[in-house]
Length: 95
Image 1 (cartoon, rainbow, N blue to C red):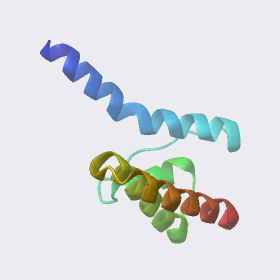
Image 2: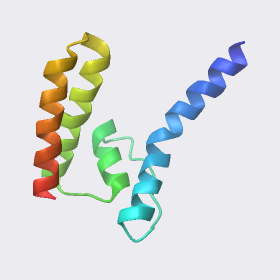
Image 3: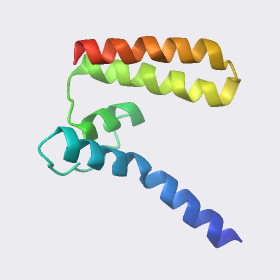
């Protein structure tokens, strides 16, 4: 049973890289994601994997990921959904 748990956690840990690869294949030139920089936080690495190095985009990604994480943790679904919809609009309008 422990090996199933470890395999599941390994697979979940790879999801951001898989999502970034799919995004780059669909909306970018299909280049590789590159290495993860241990000096950056998770949102900065994810923005970089998507192909964005702009600090404003990184901050928006940090806010976006925090709001979506809040839905799972705190249960404030309606407030978080409105906030995430707002951030979605901001990200789309800026980029």
